[in-house]
Length: 378
Image (tube, rainbow, N blue to C red):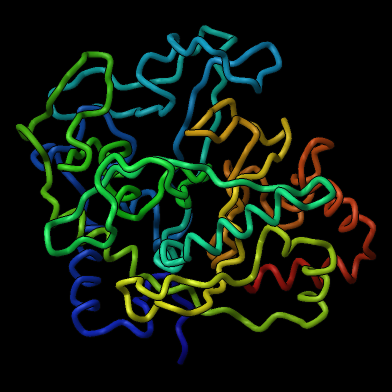
């Protein structure tokens, strides 16, 4: 019997990689306590709480931003959200006050985000920079509304000596962002360390400071740094080694429509990985991630008022179409309950995808169903 799973290791993983995967798997599911360093303010108490089955949700992260009168453009003055854009509704480790969304200021916009799935993230990290930069150059030269650009970010992480995945020094600028809904993170090391700190208040050598909080607490119930690099590395390697869920067979007609309507212009079916990527099963191959990893302007109807790096309120990284059958809702905030709703939501008059949505709407019902059925198999 074949199991329909979203939490299995890379099929080509070596024995030493499987051992690291199992170690990180335990940590990923561990419910953290105050004695572990939880808090002083946090969103959820475990990785699994946000990424059940390594998928998307059920955790929900709320964001706040001061916006102009149009409700979309961020104000230059964000002082009315002094603890940043992330709402952290729980307090622990001696703290009494959480970071909550203001309710009495009409200029502050509250939005929500579903956490991304974490399976297949190693495949995304392995994609060669050259492949992404080539796509960005092609997008800049393209006619029509579809563009796309790289979000350049600064590398923050540094792994244990002797276990360095990247050759970057901490603080290296201008790297290609590829993780997060607005591509604000360049590597999985950063992704994990950022989630530990930002979502759980767990500090590490990569993120040594507690999240900003109303009481100005600089520590929690566990004095000093909460976890060392071995914990960060184990969690990172677990995420890095998660396989893309096995795909079902989609129709040839649906695949043809996916290309003809220019869905594949942004959701590019496969990209080439680095030849020197340390995970042997992901090096020098084409991976089917269905994304260009570029930022695209989706118009004001999908804007959230939050800027991240060079990504504007209206810009989002092309979502990798991986394991969609494990998602109960779609788009960054889960507003789309069906794939049809998600496609139509791309159709804002100022969205780069507006012509694709018009072409989709012009299809007969049978062809629309064929296309949506194909996407659901990814």
